[in-house]
Image (cartoon, rainbow, N blue to C red; front, side, top):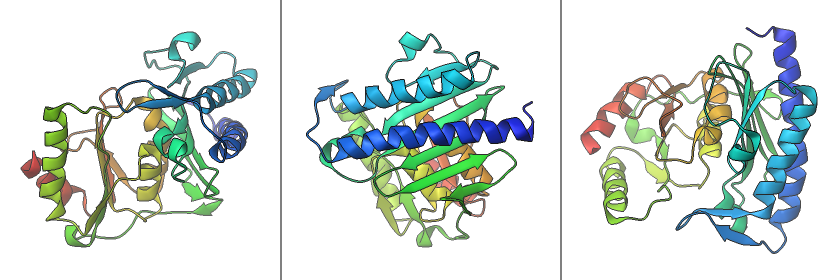
Length: 270
């Protein structure tokens, strides 16, 4: 296992990389974007690709023998399967659709897993100037100040975040909207901000009480956020209530007080 000194170094390097990528995102945010379609509604821009190269090149100079998994260029960097080796898992621009539309929920997400366990997490939103950080065993922070999850213990007082996902076939859309319809009667309100990483950070700092997402892009959306939520006192789990599995694209997060009531209403909504 890494020492505290090593973990602090990993965090510092990840923050440097996130700040560099953040500058590129900030610059691109106010300019005309060249947009490509990855899928029906899934977009990618030159900024996504530029940020990923930048983050990986920055980290590789310090940690040449670590593994790297990224959203845009996994194939180019060779790693697709998560092993026990220290692995940087990066979403260079989470919230690409937001970025394209000039909606300020965009961030770079940099997570480090050691022994498959998310251990260091950095999520940086340069437009809102918010830097979320977490290191296993050392707490979670927003712009250097400690953060913790909310203390809500009744669903009716909770703000729930989710996303529609990128699939637009009728069965998926119906399942998604029916689930939301059902949950709307149980919680105070629902938000869809368009960034899984920002939703996790929202749980960590208490501005959201519950979040779930099914069928998100991959581990790069959540690797950093998981550390930040858990270090802020939150829980990360499968929406059904089972243990979370990073290889399956189903995630939920909440404060510990509300987790059981949420998984109960979630299974009723299925």
